Image (tube, rainbow, N blue to C red; front, side, top):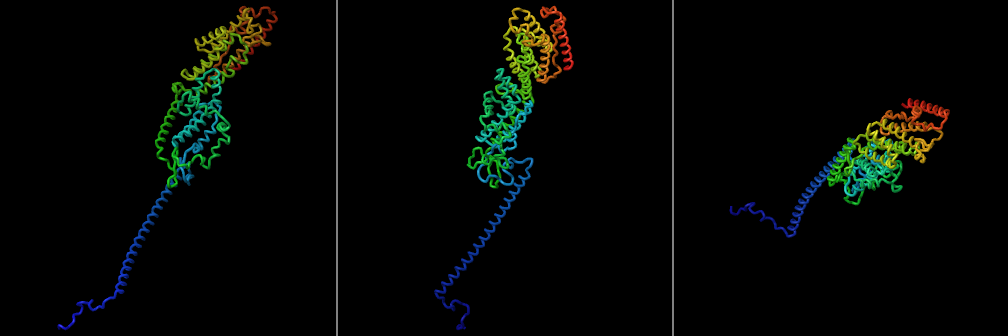
Length: 544
């Protein structure tokens, strides 16, 4: 058995040996197989990464589109609470692709146009007009304080103040013209400044000094043709819409691409939406506080009287109603109410001048009484009237009648008694002077001179007196109307024993009037006087 060969004991031993070339080829094949397997693994990994990236991109795109859709829906649903950004910059697409957005007055197109077109009504309702101006001004100021700061804010406020100064100047030139003229003519400079400061406060809610008021109103004076656009609402020069686009704003004026941060509150987000620069929150909160203080001040001044309101320097403020009332009274005094310069009274004797000066002073007292004793306009108006009469009171005869008549009013508080007794006193003194040889040297006491008319032209002394009394009664009714009192509370002048008919009843006291006259002439004059009496009585019955 030893000679039998064992199968499988050493298989390699029976294979023929490989050559060197065969071994090299086998090695190369093995390496390629390994490299192929590695490449397949890398391709598979790259495919998986690409699929994941594509999935992520599609998910992000879907989320962004959903976000855009939600924002668009929110903007389009914005109706009664339309955001200012949507109003200014649109809801379907933004006006600006690059650059910062700066706010200007033109962005509040409706309010700005209303302010530019505002004109005084001329109806005398000063309070209502100031309220309307205040509403427009404060709305625009609030927008400025909310959406600007720094130099940009100062520039927009300066523009707004210039427009307001022009509008308030117009108001004073129309609805307060008579008052301003009276105060100027009588040298009431401080009161003039108070009036300007008062209407400024009632419009803006803040107080300014007299000097600051002068500087403010200086802005309202047109310095050239360019400024007249604010005075002429229909002028093309005021065309906010002419400069603006479909949304009422001037792109060139509103936007800046310089990249400057000064005054730039609005910026574009990646989603092309306009957003507020959060760095300006502090400025906005400060503006809100300022507006609250202004509104609170305006609420207090409108609800109270001039006695409870004040302006800079502790001066009392004049309300719109105070000013309107004073202006109506000033219009009376500037016109026919100025008896010292009335075309229907040409006599210059001391007695009639003193009597008319007293009536003027009593008008001032009655204006104060009807306005309320605490009304801030009382003292300025009385001072203005005193300036008018003081010029005449240096004459002794004038002051004598003035003092008598005003004392009657101070004692009785009755305008009827004061004017009636004052007229009797003045006429008696006038008659005594006409009988005085020394007084007759003056033209005012010559025989042809009347009490109310400097020269009697084809009329008697009695006719002149009757005509003058009728003029005073009419003038007094006009005065009552100017201060809002019932015209039926007027005066009815009668002179008792110094009246025309009193002269006939008591000729002994006026014998000089009849000296040298024939009985026929006397009878004729008596008939004339009787006829005048009838006419006068009929007139009184008709006018009440």
